[in-house]
Length: 433
Ligand code: NSS
Image (cartoon, rainbow, N blue to C red; front, side, top):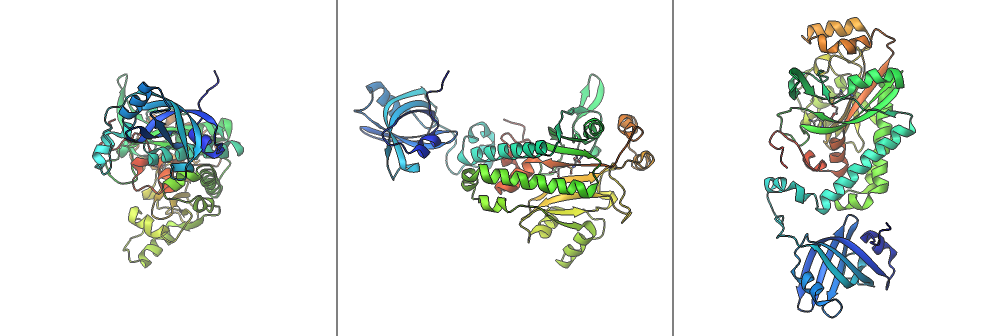
């Protein structure tokens, strides 16, 4: 069935004065004065003022327009007229105005508390800012997928229910799987490693779960994780892939979401400038830089939010920190022959203190080394038999990484808190709505 309705943005850009259009959407603002109602309608593309004169429409339609509160859904038909005072420079002179559903008084008004807004998240996501973020997130995902496809990666579907603790036992959500202990996945990495042996280059977008009690502006308990794994690629090659991917994502957002970026106070030009190469420094150098800035770090200390902010404050592009001490990272990473205290790994830190957006490494291919580390760290071998098997049957150099989609969205949209990078955030204190 052909759609007889036109999206608002299309009407505004057509600028065809005198043309008749039908639109449908929700009342964004409304005011009435006697014989005239100004009803600003929004759809997913934008807003337009609809002017309803008592003399132009059937009587019951006029009284419907007068009664309808914001967020009522409407269909209306009207003639396009230039009006400099209206948003977008045009208005619709309404000929027909049908209220599809009269809304109750909308609970969300100006200056409401954060907890109230979060309790009403199902309604809050209609706001212009939230809508802009959701559209930008879509472009992040789309831009990433396009880059992977252009670079011969296969999209694959690893499981979410697992018995593996890829990123250590402390942040696992556990569940009973028909009487057996199982977990929600923290990372698809190990399954992706297995799939590289068939497909060589793979990526997956999955929800990942972290039972992190830390209430920070960059932690969710459920987030979308885009992970890639590449056979025949070392840590240096892995970093090249990451910087190209992130640049392609920024460029996709810059070219497709100019308007949404503006709503969030961000310019497309800033994102266009995020091009390879990104700077690379070792963890050891990072500690020196930080101590030069007045910190008192010991080699081996973890880099927290404040440290990441200090490291990236002068940068406009992300920064790689490489070769972390072994005690800070997971057991599956490859030994670094250049500094045996460290692994061949890298975290990508977003500029302006937005912090880590990617964690990646070359993977250990030596069966004995993996077993030794697992023994040292008291990791039970049983759930990992299949993972260790991969080292017995044609193991090759391989690397991979995981990118937190909401971390990337938070940075690109310059959001104060990661919860605004996802429509229904999950944090230690929130699982409703
Ligand atoms: O723990 S990571 O640093 N690394 C991994 O999970 C690897 N197994 C990935 C891989 O090599 N395939 O997490 C990767 C990224 C990290 O850089 C963040 O961007 C994001 O996942 N991440 C999170 N985002 C939001 N909330 C939380 N809690 C979170 N934890 C990690």
